[in-house]
Amino acid sequence: MTIIYRPDTLEEALDILARPTLIQVTAGGPPPAPQPRAIILDTSRLHAMAGIHRIAGEFIIGVNTPYTALIRSPLLWPAAACLVDAARLREDDLPGSAFIHDLPQVSLDNPILLALTVLDARVEMAVRTEQGGVARAIMPLRDGLLTRPERPHLLLNLRFAAGGPATASALYRAEDLRALQPDAWAAAAWLGMDPESGIITTARLAIATHDTWPTVCENPLTDLIGSPPGREAIEAAVRLAQRMCPQPRASTPLFSLALSAHLIRETLDRAIARSRPLTS
Image (tube, rainbow, N blue to C red; front, top):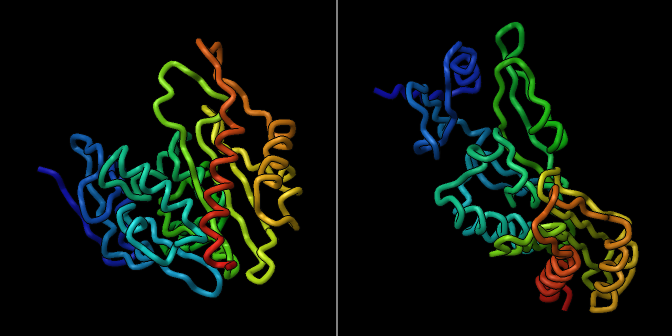
């Protein structure tokens, strides 16, 4: 019989994680791939891991949040729409997914990771101290996911800037590539506009490759910042990205395809389209 624990506090949860046994962490339902003889830690009662909030210019999303809740939430649109795009893709791939299932086991082909990278997200983590208490720390996304403490710990939430009143983002993934092995399989863009002039004031672009952490391309966006959004600005960004953000190819590909330029055009165009109602 499966043993399920539902702690009411972080202290209780970390005490359970300190046990020398196999533990699977989930929230409100079974883990996607239940393992025999594993103890289930259901964190659905922990408030620090729940909810979608906008506080003091920052989004804070608990890792217990299922992707269906992101898709339904109007709070994230359009500034964090790239995360909604990623949630739709992930929900299509694996219905019932949530951050708590994806982030502890980082998969580089997960669009959620690309969206969080372009949003410049941070993570908050709870760690059990030597005295048995709880220490909470906020750290960059990559550090929080790839460099875990040895002591029992839990990811609590994700944090990223909400942006200004005319901020929009987008994520686009290429589908059905079959035997083709492109230089990149997805891209995400985050743009901030001046609501009066419509000029682009801030921009970030991230590209997902096959077997590396998503690449953040900053220099190619210099031609976007200070320019009106349009085809010329997008093409200038694409040209610079092709020169300054080369993407590694998969080893010994059967076929290869330079797809990154199309991905960049598509994400920038979608982000700009989403920002136009805010700047008109």
